Length: 163
Image 1: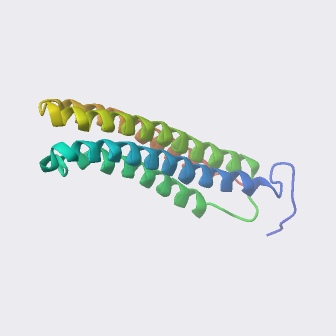
Image 2: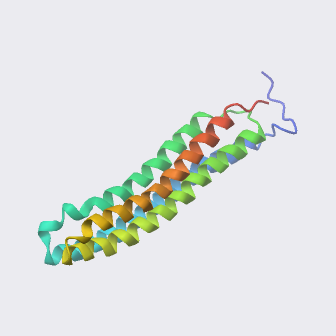
Image 3: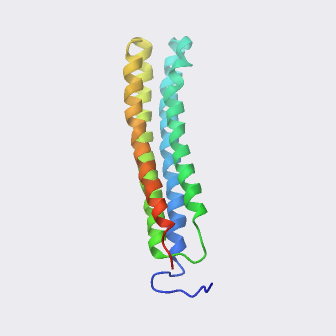
């Protein structure tokens, strides 16, 4: 196999794939960290008055952590497709896959954090709000899942690209 750079397979093509893998893990973990921190603040504030609800109120923190796993999965899958000689098409597809899951994960992490903070505090005062909080958290979490699905579909297209 020759490693001669061509118009469609330049030497810098793998850079875009690496940036896709980096974007996936960094942005998803940024969203997960924000969601965990914001929900954790609400949980500890609620725990001062209602320590019996701490375990029940940890749900938003767990859901925020799952968002980071989405970024890890996509980063590993993109990383498995790296080659020394790859097409520019594959690099751009991997970049798009990483950005789709990363930015969707960041948005979902923000939503989970804000809803988790307010929801945990509110459900401590009115226990009937817990079910509503869980439903809103699910709708916030599914935004990251949409990004994961798009990233997986895109990444399968990158493996078909040839130089």
